[in-house]
Length: 130
Image 1: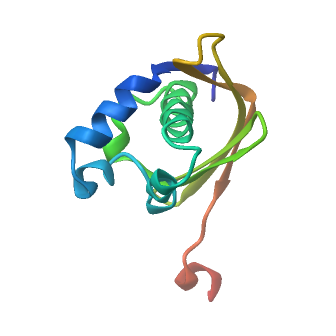
Image 2: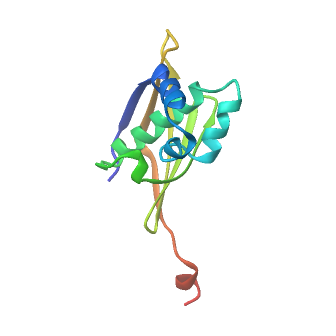
């Protein structure tokens, strides 16, 4: 059963990663859509929010794994609302949460509450054709 997940990250940490690592390494943590934000004014805040959202979902689900081991579909940001989609084997988890920048605008936070997590069973084409 899902619980509550919370994460906080220093935005300067994400900026440092982008300067230090090449795209293949960053792609183990961020989706192509998230990495495309590097060319917008939303970066690096948006990447920090995506990172926090993923970490918060891992914590809410009680998983003891790193981001590179997840099959994340995407993190969507609409205003202060987050939508995180995760595929795990034949299960799709969709979680909603919220994010905030702390007053100094150097730290980003994300919160996923258990009431906002929905798991669905995915079926392969072979299963649907039976």
